Length: 192
Image (cartoon, rainbow, N blue to C red; front, top):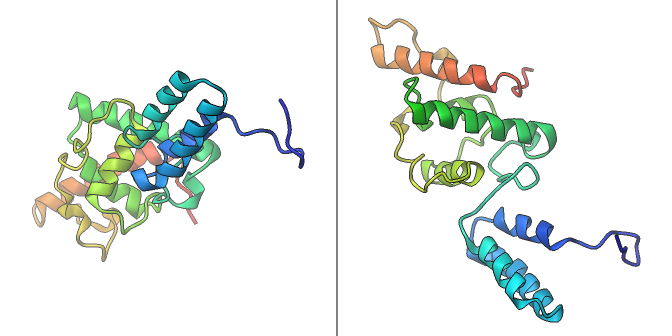
């Protein structure tokens, strides 16, 4: 691979495309689109450039190298990021199969309580994040899956919810569902 004057390797177009796909808005992607367009014209490869630009301007995509900033830093790179993506995809399979009573609202509660996801994330943004990590996941399918009122009371974590069903049956059910989901995150959760 050719190097630049400072011995830094050239940036591959695929890296630029992946970086642009991780951006949330068209405005944030625009400089990368312009860069690829200009490079494709320079190389007289307009058709290949257009294909790359189409990929950059589609729905936001993320991978272990381009994780959304709403995740705690520990989960935004390397092995932890890769494992997190795999866990979310397994959870998607369980939710889609209806094998458990899990919802994405419960998943969000666990991720916030376990310091995987920042607490200020809205259900709409959570929808965008999950859809960017799961190929083929349609927009709004996360936001509309579950009762996000579970996120309102932040005075206690899901572990502190009542497990006594006759006192508070909904809270006891939510606690059990969150506990089941948390078991899937166990390999990456750091306990202090």
